[in-house]
Image (cartoon, rainbow, N blue to C red; front, top):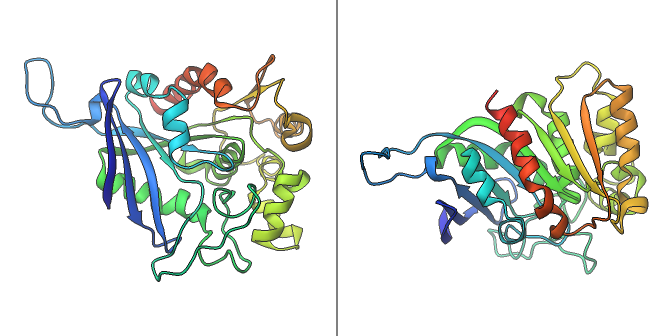
Length: 294
């Protein structure tokens, strides 16, 4: 692993690391924020000399994003510091060239290929070799974080748009691995909207029966006997993608039918941007901190 950035922020340490991924067969970057309790300080009468293990909150970003968008725009660090939560924000796909020097596949459209991994394990050419983002987020990245940083095995997950889809889907598939989940403006029914249909067709093929494993709406409908996680969704009523791409009402109804305790908050006038995320990020940290400390 190679540290490529380090910045002091709200009493903690914001770092960006690059590592060779055994899952994507490429170099991958992730940002990590270590709150004050997770940092080794010089001994004084009021501080400890050893870092304490802290719970980890994973953030999944949306289309076109890298590991940078969330750490620069969301205003998260004040709340990560307040709740002493480590925050990890990975890239949204493999990029560039792979470990053999071959170009990672891409598409000219913004909603497919690099920057648009959709957090699935691709099965179709040319994507399957590198676009294994589900395994990267669920297995490889947490193992790396818990090995190299003062992270406990307590985790929660949240995200925005495509990353909201990823967070909900991953939490619903792996409720034993997470304490809570939340999302801003998530793509909750990817099999039924243009963004998801395009990505799933390319990455998973035309057999739509394989799509259900990565569709949060389908997973919610199957969740009646699963562990229920605290679940919060914030959605702006002024979001330009609300009607065509997001459809939160479908997910809300499925949760009600499955007796899954979720909170959907429609926020009047807010759009799809980080202006929206930064307005309510404090609530999401409080949501996760309550579950992680329970």
